[in-house]
Image (cartoon, rainbow, N blue to C red; front, side, top):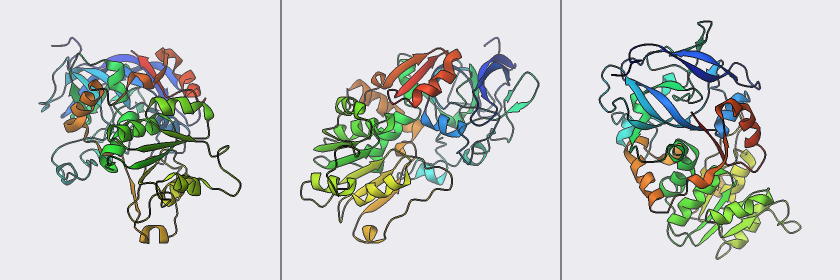
Length: 383
């Protein structure tokens, strides 16, 4: 039995008190886990664009104060009543998309959108409607995406974590908590990319590069990466792209990105699978229009700003294209995580290559700056 089991823990956390303000690193109290909850000591956490999106104030579900962070691995410190799948000492990956195995969505092979904790997760609280964090003044602090990994300790629902082998590197494991899994799964599960097909990916960030890996794993014949940063061409090639298009420099007079991509398809009728990894609603529309007439599939992965609307002429749907979205790449985190880890071991899925920056937890605010400089895929923090 842990010496801290059943007791509050004092630890350091990076608290977001206001939108567009630096995180405050301070001592907080983390309460013991309640029924169907586990308390986790964070071992590695990564910074994702979604954390920055919420900190910017653009997230309609953003609540302050909160503890951000959702790409993380850790070690179970203690478990609450009725927890049967975890014991103290287990290594886990936190899951912002839960998997209870019981709801109609979990039982469906076609979706991963478990609803077991979704309604309370969006309100920044645990399933019982309360929080497990408070600051030194005793004020409550909201949870974030059911994870809150920018803290030395956190509490999550038992359906919001998956046990992994202790031999698997914790920094690699953290990356499977969001972006890499999202992109890789979008190619393999959401789009179900076929061998010999053509693929176009808008946005050469971590998610887009993970899509490229998924397309390569499926033996796509042409994988086109689209990005306005020419420095990302090397990344694109390293992660599996066969072509790189910069819309700012590679389009002829009167040529659009849609016409350019169609001209790169085998017969001029468009790309088999297109992916938006930007969150730009115009790009979302372009991606659909560039998909193949009759059979093209276009997947929206990027999150648009609150209130923005993507629009398209119905003609592009009437003529056979499919427009769909994905969360966490359609991956069921608890039942399918081991396959992702195996794909990494088999050389299909890069992980450590995504870690371009490593920082001390005390440098977390600098990491947000790194994220927007164009040379950063993921920054990790070891606790």
